[in-house]
Amino acid sequence: MTSIAIAARPEVSDAVVMPTARGSNTAWRRFRRDRLALLALLLLLLVVVLALAAPIVATDPSKVDLDAIKKAPTPQHILGTDSAGRDVWSRVVYGGRVSMSVGVVAVAIATVIGTLLGLAAGSAGGVVDNLLMRFTELIQTFPLFFAVVIMVALVGPNVVNVMLVIGLLSWPGLARLVRGQVLSLRQEQYVEAAHALGVPELWLGFRHILPGVLPYLAVYGTLALAQAILTEAALSFLGLGVQMPIPSWGGMMNSAQALTVLVDQPWLWIPPGLAIGVTVLCANFVGDGLRDAFDPRAGVR
Image 1 (spheres, rainbow, N blue to C red):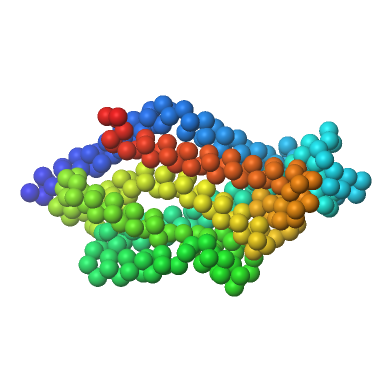
Image 2 (cartoon, helix red, strand yellow):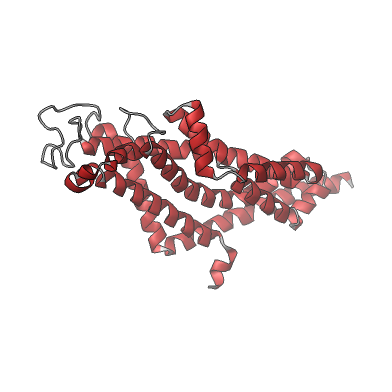
């Protein structure tokens, strides 16, 4: 019996790995057929490339040109200048670095917390599951944006605090999603076979169950990125996010609170507003495309 069990272990492992690889290839083919999602992915990558190449494609965002204050777009300043004589194009590009960084770090924090708690709740069950889910529901009772505003006001508005607060308060939805998927995957034959062979619960969760959750994490990550960028922009617009002189899209939109700016100086708020809109829309379209690509029913539509 021992020799049979030892010989069977590789077969269980292969049964997990091979369908995952085929499923990934199939999902990628489905995603490529979604032209809107593919275009959104290319635009999102363009935003990321511009943000990473900011020192090459833009000048110092804090550089002041006293001869060009609140000037409309010119060949020297293609998107005009702000009230301090700073180049709007440079601040939009560097603001993309800040806004995207806040979104990525916040989503990474929320993903780690939500995945670990969801795996623990779904795998342990019983009292542990009840306690973790009741705690998750308690966090969800607070409206996310208002909770973020209160926490940022308490700890102080800066880039690091905004990242941490958004990430630490955005995980409950993912935790419930992961828990539900874990409970579903535990009924699969390959998981039951691994469990019958005596695979430890921790190894079972990370080696055999987690790969089945990864597609859902990919969808969550893109959609949560859009939400995190919007939250950071709203906080900065209210003066509770990234503080000047560090550029961020939401901070640049703060100037649009004045009626004279809205009417007479549209170059101060239209570029960052378009950057936020395009990035959020692209992230949402990519998330929708991934969701459809990983949906097993998509192949019969």
